[in-house]
Length: 288
Image (tube, rainbow, N blue to C red; front, top):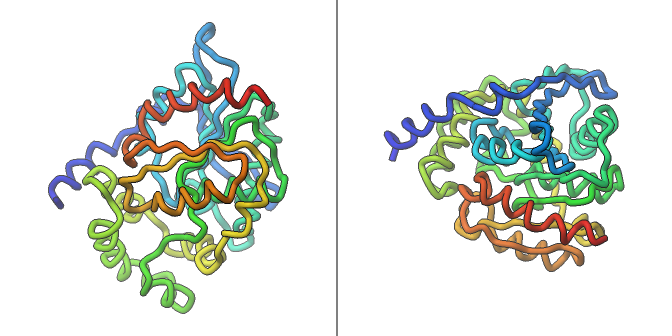
């Protein structure tokens, strides 16, 4: 399997979306620059809607290439890179935590002057939970939130949850092999999915991940889900080992206005079928 993972990592080296996108650095209210990649569809092919993408923890852009390249045909895309990403110029004065990261989405909406009535706010994994937190705090009100498997708790290997608070950042290099093993053994359905997570791990900055992750790793967010009344498209991948579909199903019962759909695999949630699912459901959301 290791050779297959290496091959997939080579394929993830190039992002077609990054080549075509405009790069913008948005300066947040705490003076932290957040990187945004933006594309606009060709004149005559646009459908009038924008998608803000708030991907999961450490997620690399090439892992979303199939989704993004299909979506850009008719949606304006705003791909938001969150504070743990290498592109974020995080300083010691930068604020962190769930509320700050949700507020980054609000500030991006405000700075880019996005009409929320034409907005699909799309998040995956922890990025989806951040969106839920912002909805809970009424920071924004997008027409169509689309959430892939929002976890109520940040996933880390159990033993590391006890070590992270006391471990200095330079020990991150020692921990990486343990996390790589955990990913390959327990948390991926295919070499391609493993490659995505391992590349993100290899590129991670230990100090940055600890600063951003520490306020998230020891909190549970179950209580916020029932308090969100927005209509939501909640997407599960029932074969995905990293994102437990049973949890997503439970969350769907807690969110009274959610619509639950299952795309089967992690690969599908990153593929054109995910974009087509959004297109299919837009009329349902435009009724309200």
